[in-house]
Length: 153
Image 1 (cartoon, rainbow, N blue to C red):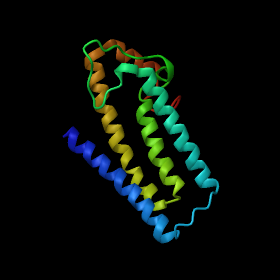
Image 2 (cartoon, rainbow, N blue to C red):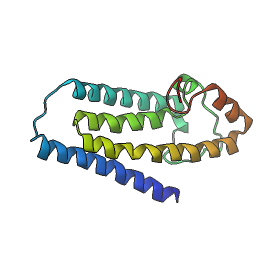
Image 3 (cartoon, rainbow, N blue to C red):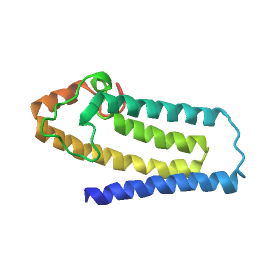
């Protein structure tokens, strides 16, 4: 089931980007005007890349594709992980939204909003595994940090 949801999330992202490209080509006539919305999109994309890179470097060898653990896995609670538990997922959401903003595509943005529930579900699965692996240490960490948006959620 997790694999099918992962595939579906990739399909949603693909459709959103395809919708944004279609919008850019057929509605906007492939005319790229750098305006406030596109500037915001560029800033969001840059912030997303930075967030993902910082989070991945902080995890070091613990960054793995998929939801799994190394035998010697330790809970990372420093760096950006001191504020939020899932900065890589935040970076992923921001990256996808930023790309859509760069294309100024309302249809792509609406479709991309459908990607967020998949990320939140994946976080839910990952957190259950983290609780199983680290127990009270992870529960205490959850009390001190936000899930994905610093100081908010």
